[in-house]
Image (cartoon, rainbow, N blue to C red; front, side, top):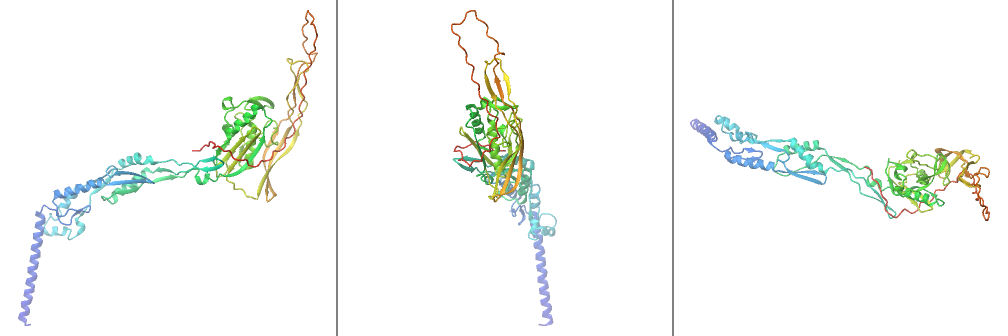
Length: 512
């Protein structure tokens, strides 16, 4: 190519470039002018992801309002475990404000000269065409909703109950407690409502505190083993005393004592009144035998005491009688009196214990069930040790002038006094390994008490009569009552084997 041709080519290319440059400038000018004069929103402009490009301001406002309404009516579901509470976002206090967002979106490409307009176009910088609405939540409104609608699903923990029917133990279902944490739930909902705003349904889990029941079914159903039992005889009791033994045993039968709880005999057998089924029968009072409503119930507390120590539950309170009783060895009794002398014991195990009682008219028996955790090669027995014996002394005789000459009645037999201890002896594989003193008891000696009529010299002579009787008939002296021998230390009562559990379902009491 000649030098002349090269110059012509360069001039042509340069001219073409200049023409293109001028055309581009004209295009930019025309585009800028077009946007400035157009009543439509620039292409590529979005609000909350809603494309409003190419729409008039009025059209965009309509579309935006539709979007806002969908956000306000957005379905929000609050889950509370298996429960659900549904409401619209607006009801929960959600709101959004358009303010000047639409106006700012509309002004894209309509301000300044053509160059500045071009720099603001979405096709130049996409982010410059994206706008967001402002969201907020009225937390007072939201909190009121949560308190009113969600806290109704709060539940208290439910303990498992132990039932005994047809000789079989069963445990009812337990339930965890639940409580809505209002402030934390409000914070979670507020965040979810404003974090990712969409028209799609929203599900949020409430924040809850979970409380386990004090006694779970797994724990309660462990009560199935016989821990200890004991029986005493009341076959020689009169009808009133037998009734009192049966009545007190009936009140105790079926009692469930939960872990850590203390049993009070006085409270469980109720006040000894006729209204509660008790009758007047002999009982000890200040070293004397007297008639009292509920006489004989001490045999119930005593028999229960022996079952309790066989079960190795914790004895909280126990008192000896003022004088020895005949149905157990010394130091193996447990007296109750008024409200000041009680027999109490505590369930010191991790499982509820069940107390079964029977009184069939001759034998009183208690059986205590729970979870057996003691080693099989470990056995125990109890031994009463007499430290001192106190003789009752000479009989005490009282003359009753209202009685006939020769009258004699033993109102109270003699009682030997004792100081004694009760020891628990522990064996492992049949070998004695330890011994523990359970109690120390003192019993008063009491002499025999006799009531007699006056002697002939003491008797008041009968007044003389003016008319002699046809036939003098001598009145024979009444027979004397033979005084019983002084009581000896009673023999120990052996621990009986477990008897068959009662057939009926017994009442239970569940703790809060």
